[in-house]
Amino acid sequence: MSGAAPASVTGKVLALLGAFDAAHRELTLSELARRSGLHLSTAQRRAAELVAAGALERGDDGRYRVGLWLWEVGSLAPRSSSLREVALPYLEDLYVVTRENVQLAVRDGTEVVFVERIAGRSAVPVLTRVGGRFALHATGVGLVLLAHAPTEVLDEVVASGLTRYADRTITDPEQLRRVLATVRRDGYAVSPGAVTDDAVSVAAPVVGHEGRVVAAISLVVSLADARPTALAPVVQTAARAISRAYAGSGLH
Amino acid sequence: MSGAAPASVTGKVLALLGAFDAAHRELTLSELARRSGLHLSTAQRRAAELVAAGALERGDDGRYRVGLWLWEVGSLAPRSSSLREVALPYLEDLYVVTRENVQLAVRDGTEVVFVERIAGRSAVPVLTRVGGRFALHATGVGLVLLAHAPTEVLDEVVASGLTRYADRTITDPEQLRRVLATVRRDGYAVSPGAVTDDAVSVAAPVVGHEGRVVAAISLVVSLADARPTALAPVVQTAARAISRAYAGSGLH
Image 1 (tube, rainbow over the protein chains, first blue to last red):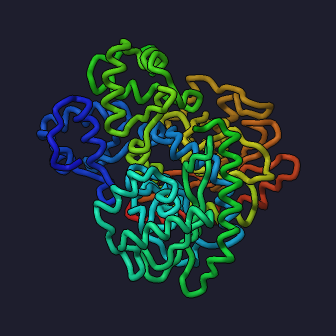
Image 2 (cartoon, one colour; image 1 turned 180 degrees about the vertical axis):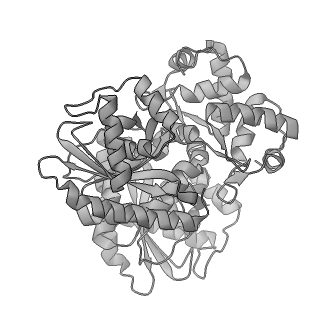
């Protein structure tokens, strides 16, 4: 949101909250003003209101941080926290059985948002973090979500250009369409060396009401010792268990 | 926040967000207006702005929910998500080793807020949920956090009355003071049958900069087969590992 100059007060409040990101978790007042596009005095006044409500917190060093209250409200979001709550036991099972990286993600527009991640201690390093976003076409979970998204989403993804992140990222629209067809046919996605050269992701869909794909889970393992065909049924089984629990949870 | 009639626009925005809680994750417009203390037309206008920004989401059924964007911002809160990120591998270790309920919590005023929870599948049922709050005096993590809080916090907790939740909840202020002294001396808390009759919590502090207690972790196990003295060093060891990782993470 940096650089904008929001006119409404609601816009100003949201701009202050949107000034924070993973690389900017603590901001001085002047950073907060600059990144939210507000005048210093406006930023200070609104930030004080947000601190009073617990939406922001101010440290002894005078820096602003996202507050515990906002985290609590955020933790009520059905598409992330509620889904996560339903899925977590099964993600833990997947972790205990494989000791690999386990991920849970949803689609937001043309991006994938990681809702949960259990990082294997000795597993291959992954770039994702909880609350982080990534390109749909480069991740296993993203391919699953894209394969089951409206065609407009695929058109938009292709139109905005398929960025290369690693040696084997899919950058050709025709290849992407073929891969997505395979994902729909097989019920899982295998994405080798697409985010980082040395990792492969095996992903499967979480299905909600009326067969709608609401999320995807994946195992991310080292490409060197990967056995994707052996991992696919493991991921699919966990994904089906989550789908079953999700259907029973009353979430939409 | 329900029932209030916030005057400032910032207050109105926060009242709309605060209208949601664990028992009210989906609200109709009229529920949203009533719980936020706003006029229907004001609630509708502000809610539309929040939906446009992704802070709220509106389902096909017309109901409002907390949006993915707000969850993402909330996930940047250092006192919850960042702490959780640092702690999670060690909480997972604790779960793998014990297969019991594992909890991570921080203090907010006179309450404990649960930041993470790994529920053992066959472990004793617990009442807590991530983002949920509970009384300090009744939980193992709460006793640890209270033992290391300023004395004003204890005074406030005692003054507001020590609610009984189960057979062995501490309700006598003098007993509470004695227990807290023991917690400080031993470096861990054991809280049997205080939240539910059949569970015991064993908790230890996570220590940050300058020896400040920033969080607490616990194992909650069945009172029937509990061996708290055997579990205490397990919890303490994990808590020390988290403290070490926390110190290295640059968090305050």
